[in-house]
Length: 286
Length: 286
Image (cartoon, rainbow over all chains, first blue to last red; front, side, top):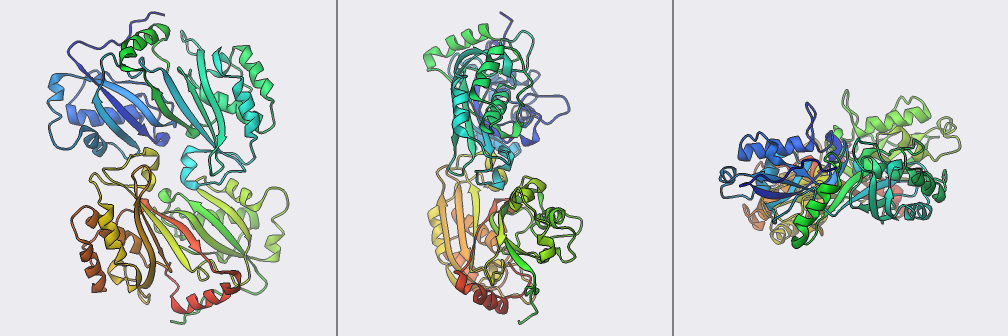
């Protein structure tokens, strides 16, 4: 598992970007040939400010969100040379300049020199996602249609929470993951709560050290079956025990999913956490 | 001013629709040839349930929103014959059926037989609109980009409120209205408040008996000039006194504007209010 990983190049200065996006128009975060992605938009804006970069400013991201998935609390880093830094100049802040170059559905909240040892992906200690479902009991706001899965039946959120409770802890989540070669599916799910917002919208929040591919959307698909009375909480625990991908539960639509938060350790543990994570996981996971 | 107006045809039963929409994709509420509009989508869904209607189900709406304007609290009415009503059938509610036929950016909250004398447009006693502005002091949520005007400078909301206070009352708002032949521009602006949401977004809320065309967006344009320090509150009062359209203040973008609420009187005054409004205003206003 000890693959060569992206260590910082000597002499470059690392910057942390905090950002969010409405993922509707994008084929995911990661750059892809001939497709609009969040990363491509960021790179275009950065290139306008700093000039061409052969290595995409060494950009790395904490959560490689899929096509159509949104982010409110995404974190990325880039590495800049002193030559590039000279181009920042004075006047408006770098975040304001980037936002004026970016489409309005991508917003950079802040960009600042990162603490020593910081790696947006590998220093992260947890990821938090939210999935929104408007069921038959919810007030249906059309302004939130882009971020909410609509169901025409009512969900039993208590039953969903009981099913969710069985998933807490360190497990092999292979049942809920789209397999990727060489990638482990063992994850620590630290929190999963099912609740209703004041407008009745059902919100599932999940926090884990990391999530394997499709994991949140597969888990939510299973919880919806329970909430709709078509499965029992015990069924979800049973399929978790199968430890291999099952097709019984639908991977729910991407547009209900939003990356909410990336957690990082205290400064003193930043480099250590990054080293630990680099050794545990392969490169193509989130 | 006593034009022939849409009185209810004998034998038809009037239904009140409460609905909302994300106006981004639509060329406004009102049906237009070859353009996607909210009304066209509603008519298509209604036709699927009730069959073809030569007169568009006699649909009338309380606020004829412009292209790109959103609505959370829109109200419309339709008139249905007993023959058409037979097609409702049993099972899922009519609102649920319409929503399953409508695009997800239009939602019917409820549809029910209207009280006697109800007219969605003419019974209304007030309209309430909200305009959202994300200035340099606001937290910028990309999930609200579609409903929020972004400005890269900071607004002085106290100055904006002082300017707004001068507009309260019964005035000829011709300064802020796109003229329409035969239509009065005298309106009673009952409330206009400028505040900041917890995330720092500046929200202007306006309530009036009715608004003439472009009135909200012209007023907000004037308030933004004051908030940005390029005009004084007294300037806004002065141009109101001109009583004719001025080009000094920009009509701000449609996407920041949302129709929030339509007010109706108590049941006993419903028909009287409709009669009063019919006599006061011409047909092509909101």
